[in-house]
Amino acid sequence: MFKKATVDPSKLISTFIGENTSLSGELKCDGNLRIDGAVEGQVLCTGHVIIGEKAVVKADIRARNVSVQGTVQGNIRGDRVEVLSGARVIGDVNATDLLLDEGGVVRGHVIMREEAARELPPLERADQA
Image (tube, rainbow, N blue to C red; front, side):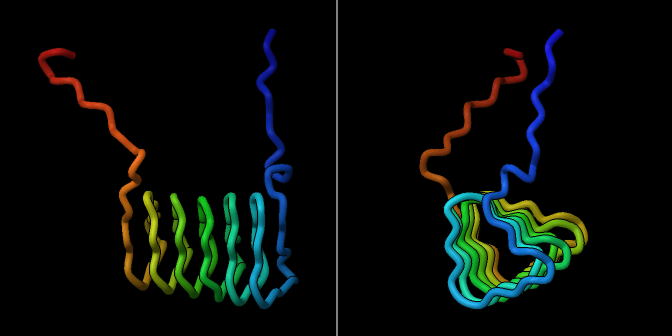
């Protein structure tokens, strides 16, 4: 009766740096970005940045969310940072939320920020549940 809506993930990525592509300099992206190639310099993104398995990024990254599957040599700043299994981050990570999968490596400082607007609801007491 009701058909579940499906979203094509490729339509969510507005900028794509392919596996056989290298870029040097400042990369600014207003949307979501996927990097599968080599980037050197600085990455500034208003949306999500995905670093693919074979990507090598020698740059500081600043984005809303950053998901690392490959290698990053530089500092990362985002609301949510994911370092997935097999990923390597050589630099500082500054995030509100951090996910570090087993097998993921961070060699640097991890700074966990408190989000001012984020307020957790009070827990229910066991005798009221």
